[in-house]
Amino acid sequence: MVHACGLMCLIARWPAKMERNNEVMSAPNLSGQINLDGDMIIHIFQEREAWRVRAPDIRVIGEFTNTDGPHADDYFFVFITPDQWFEASFYAEGRDALFAELGSRFGHMLQPGLCYSTSLASRVLYPPRLEGHPLFDVIPAKRASTLFGRLWQRVFPRVDLHFTGEVKKEVES
Image: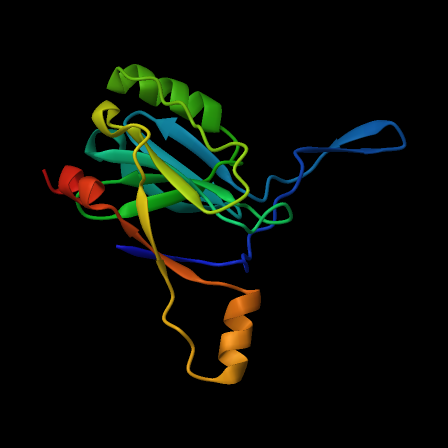
């Protein structure tokens, strides 16, 4: 399971409310929505269901940040099952209610801790024995072979994110 992360991100963050002439208008949440419906966590993105996963199947929940902000989403949650993993923006509508309910079901408060990170960082939120440990190992992308490629990498550095050995072991158990 690998995730490529760089400075270019296509998901723009938009404020939930804007003011014009002292009138508050609702703006679309371009980060989507995330809800719990029974046992299913459902992520809606651009008015379509992006993914759904059964909460009881989740083995690890983590968070990570990148350097794409402030004009693009730069903070994400990851939900990992034995077969696959799912990602949703920290800025998705419904996040707080989802985490409160999952915390209640899992018997462990899910406490995000990367709110003020402006660099590449990751940590596990659940299970409790891994809480605070890194979610990802950060591997620099292979060095470009051309001069232009090396210049591009210097301006827009890229890395690959691999789940740590601890996380892999937890998912496989």
